[in-house]
Image (cartoon, rainbow, N blue to C red; front, side):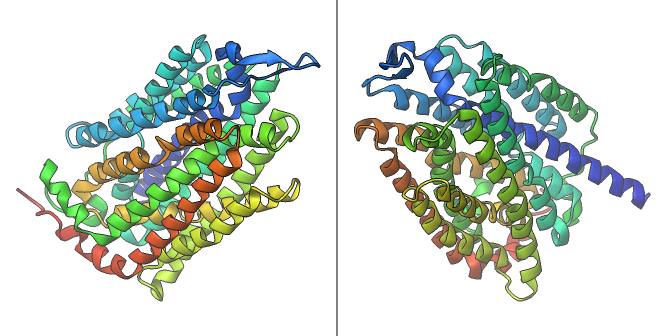
Length: 437
């Protein structure tokens, strides 16, 4: 019986891992193909140079409008996430995940059909709505399958899909954009595997909420119950640090292929996305795993280890991200790799903090609330901010990126400040709400 339960938990982890992989592939395809998409959706902004090659005109709206495509995705994602977090208390979570995966897969395919800016904007909104059904629910399912003592490592393994999916999205999107098929096929080809994963979710049985924490009874939280999360310094400081990091990294990641290609004068877009994809997957896999492992192992000596390793990594990432803007290529690639490694180090630990400092009945809503906050104040606006600053400074994207990097430092400070509170807040999490009403 125990072997069967273990095998089922492992299958659930692998399924959610696969979905998270396609989650980030679908997110980053757009960024990888931005220069080619701009030429199709904004032909009025381009003219030919003396050699007959297209180049941007002096219009001061191109980058701002392109940044709004990233903002549209994030706004719909953050607004819809609390809705699905609430629905998780009344519906089967696996069915909601299936619905979300199907919606974002079909919307990604529709992005390839976009012939106007307005259509592309609408499809990115639906991608965000679909992913909002998955983002707050997947970690709560894993928290119900795996107990506190191994939860940090499990969530770190789950979040390994972020660098791998992002890398595949950059590489795949860039290669398709440079191929004879064109950038649209990058969006078309992600639809079939997404729909298959949605079907698998439909047949998954639902785990009882709080089973791994031995919480007895069923509790349906009300809106005022979530005030308990804001009374936890660990949850608040973790969310604040994630907001600062998301603001910075969301904006930079959205623009970096175009930045390296056009503002740093590097060669073919496909090559840039491939190299960047390799950096993301190599640093992401190692850092996400090592960050979770470090936080887990250091717990025996430092009760706030998940905060500590995240904060230190961010402080190291800040100078590397600044130097990247000024050091010439190919050396700049090494600085970018170092910054990415430090930034991925916090992925597992910070999400473990969110899971461990919330009552099981509040986890789905807590993750949804966290998603709303970090994206509303983070990467929902930062791609458009970078585009706006670039337009207003005559194309100085270096200045825009420098402004983003300062938020990395702010995130590290928030996480280090949370270190002394984590043990107490984890212990008090099960006391946030009564077990029965």
